[in-house]
Image 1 (tube, rainbow, N blue to C red):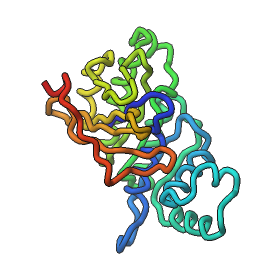
Image 2: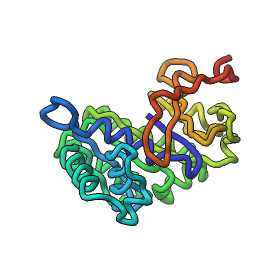
Image 3: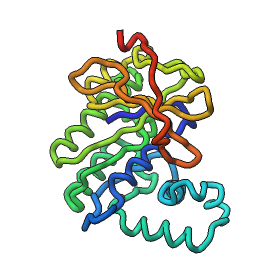
Image 4: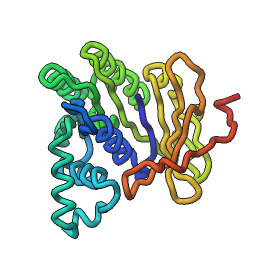
Length: 250
């Protein structure tokens, strides 16, 4: 799965939320699902703080956690949920595709992970050979890196999420207007190597929208869309967004 959005929309918050829902032990489950979050951009403490806010269900925001303005009950609740989770988080050290793949293989062998996320792809450094082969085009590097990551997921049997970033030159992210993969250079090449693609983009009412854009073997187009609250790190279960017909659906 590939998730793309411009800076500041909430890619990391969205994916950490998904990771917690997959890997945190719930209900009568005896063991949590094992997962790995490879963090290529942020400090580990920042990621863990966001996870704590997510596990508190939006009752305490990031500002409160970072300032220490929380009650002992909040701390205990977040700690218990963290201890019951199978989600491993790496520090912001791996910066090459080789290091990323090594981490995926290591955790797959040692911990039998069933879910993994690489956040985010543009922070991975190009080798001189990759730069020469791709002519410096990010989407060409993306496709090569996604193929390598996907092959590991297939070999060891885990679901893998990859997060990418795009700017205004790649897609139109006007507030309230749904962007289209058709406007992103190399989009077709990217979509050929992922099963599901998502776009996060700002809606007119201040919320963010997540559009599920593609399934492998199917036509490109909106499959499903819903609101995401970045400040709270939660999905709005009540606020599903109904897309208008656009060029992807024609």
